[in-house]
Amino acid sequence: MHKPRIIILMHYLELGGAEMSLIGLLSALDPAKVDVDLFIYSHQGPLMDYVPKWVNLLPEVSAYSVIERPMTEALRKGHIGVVAGRLLAKLKCQSYRRKHPATGDDGAIMQYIGDCVTPVLPKINPDTKYDLCISYLTPHNIGCDKVRARKRLAWIHTDYSTVSVNAERELPVWGAYDYISSISPEVTKSFLKTFPSLAPKIVEIENILSADYVRSRALETDVKNELNGHPYLLSIGRFCTAKNYDNVPDIVSRLVKSDFSDLKWYIIGFGGDEELIKSNIKKAGMEEHVILLGKKDNPYPYIKACDIYVQPSRYEGKSVTVREAQILCKPVVVTAYPTASSQINDGVDGVIVPLDNEGCAKGLADFIKNKSLRAQICDYLKEHDYANTAEVNKIYEILKK
Image 1 (cartoon, rainbow, N blue to C red):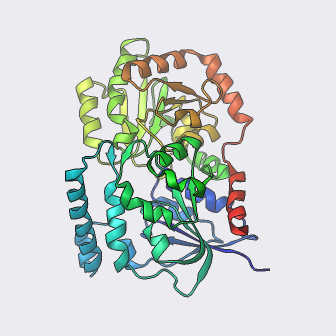
Image 2 (tube, rainbow, N blue to C red; image 1 turned 135 degrees about the vertical axis):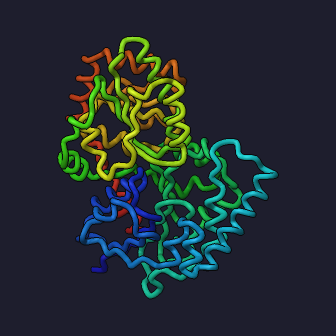
Image 3 (cartoon, rainbow, N blue to C red; image 1 turned 120 degrees about the vertical axis):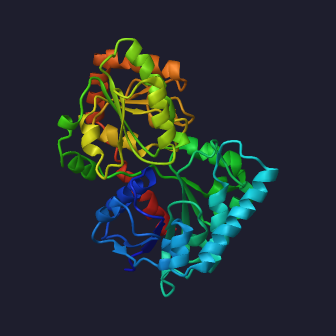
């Protein structure tokens, strides 16, 4: 019997929610049921080492590797077409933004890059026709135009109510796919407000995580000597607007001024907002209480050591690190971002607190004091599966169609 062949496309394997979700999906797929080719545009990131051995990692193609690298590097490697496409994308996006100013985070540029750069890229494994092509992150042009496939599936990882895109430009690309995978009902709802005509293509597939991977990596080192303070709060994520870390110093100053003079809030991550966060730590005088740990290839021992995992985001699609903390049986606090209730059953497997700084500080203070609720949540987490491995069956169902 013919074993279906899948190709999965991804930008790189840095530490991030979508990347962890991909590793979880690969770990859940059964090599007895499918053959998988994995095409990573740029072979970078610590998660490259965790691609399962049975998955066929296709060779890096130089033109793809520089799509998101500095343009000087792309020029040095001779990819004039990619550089020209990126410059054209920037000009077109700026022209669009002059007439249509962004109302949320500006996500339009990625689609312009997809439209302008894809035409100059070579075909991917052109001699093979796949049963299914999965494009894991936007822009999804490459999965449409550069791969031969019987069926195509594009993934949504973003809450579309929070990003400002050029919907007219994105629609034909999403429309070229047979299926669109959404990670939660709330993500589906916000996506369909922007693209109502795509409702028949939606398949909800929750993020799949490898519980064995998370638990084994959590045991690799003991970080307790590196950390001090109680309560010990932890957050992990990119230093960007969505994660709201710029407000953590003010939230912590409110907690320190009340009952928690020895509180420490550690943040693992990196990104463009680092200077803003550092400036706000200094402004609030919270240098002893808000500690940036930078990028960690293995954040799991820190989750294992913390008292409470906090996701203080302005918005999320569906946070993978929240799921990872739940796999490690840690009490989780999330702010009331639009999709929070799809992630946390409030008071059962975590707690949702207000998004404003004052409300967040009060909610955190109440939860820190409520030891019996924290213990109850931990007990609940021990008895439930947060890896979602059964979701992989939805991929097998698509292959049967």
